[in-house]
Image (cartoon, rainbow, N blue to C red):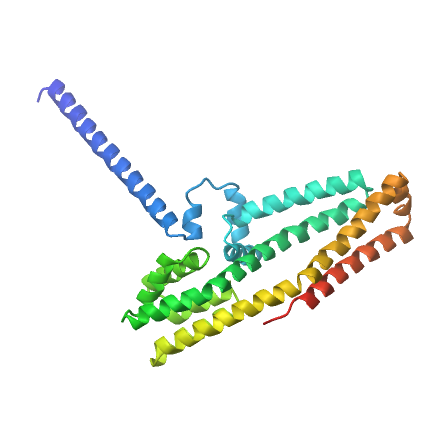
Length: 313
């Protein structure tokens, strides 16, 4: 056989295979991008987060292997924030460093570690605040959710189809959470487990009552439509009651935040009126003990006032 023809044939074959491989790679990339976009539109937080470039991946993988990382990931998931545990820890470390340096420069070197611990508390408190805010918003959507499920089941739809329809019609966070429940049901998870995980992510009495009603209706059957309609009226009344209680206790809540702010402001004012006063005060063991005790009392006062202003309806 002519070596020239053989070489040309092999070259043509390699070119054809290269073109086919390039087309397959481009098609696969396009399908993956379309899948990511479609999942992002469904409101799934984890899928939507894949649309952007994640940072600190190595740190994130190490953190996720630990028990603390898994708990942190669950807490971040409940807030609805587009963050990974690694990104949150880096942001918290940056906050602690900034507050540490600020406390040392504005007050005295002794206040650096105290401000650093304050940064940790602020970061974790921010997660709890975001989680609670999302829970409150979800609770406000529960009457509408119960109404949609009642109408859907009255029209003859199965409970699984009713949940999927509610996920499409409702806004976040209810739409996002119901979409996650619908996806779990689509892959074979039982209704009890999917709704139970929803109640664990966003704990509230109203949601527990709704989940219990749906689970019992799914197991025992019966008048699920009448139960959901009665539950809708009850949730509407609880929604108004919670709003009135929150309005009445708003002044108490502001007092809880005003007390530590006044204390820190007093320290800044003293240091401004008498430069170096904080350095002299924290230069002895007795002064340091007094400062730590004062900060501890402020924290206790904040927690106690918050407890008084927290009334379960």
